Length: 129
Image (tube, rainbow, N blue to C red; front, side):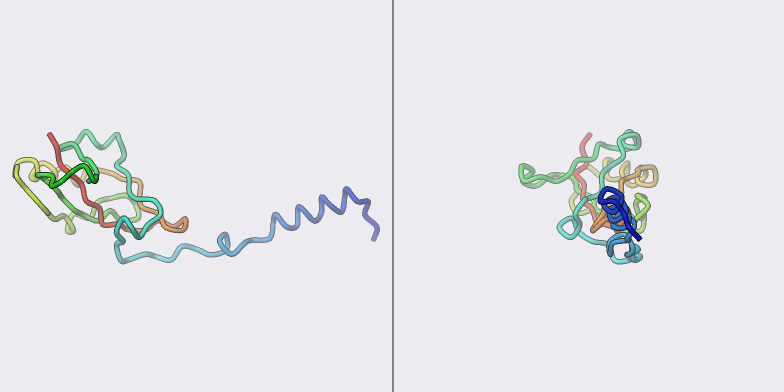
């Protein structure tokens, strides 16, 4: 069979594009163990439309020497907080913590990702009024 150079080139390019790579062929394994921020490539992010429920959430930063109200919980692969994982790490205003516990079921997050796969993540947040 004889192909002119342009047809052969197009054929080879098309063939290469349709060969599945390892990353495309590999399905994401079901992650069960929650990971910490340093173990994922992309951390969970609060979906802005759900941030109106409860107290304001902020990520801990180096500027925060010892924030007064810190909570921790797991966000699953669907972006939903796992209520049973809710923990209070530091509290000065119990009303803020109670409001956060109530709002937890209404908050939604963009799930953490590692190597293109959604993974559960343990996340910490500072509560502010």
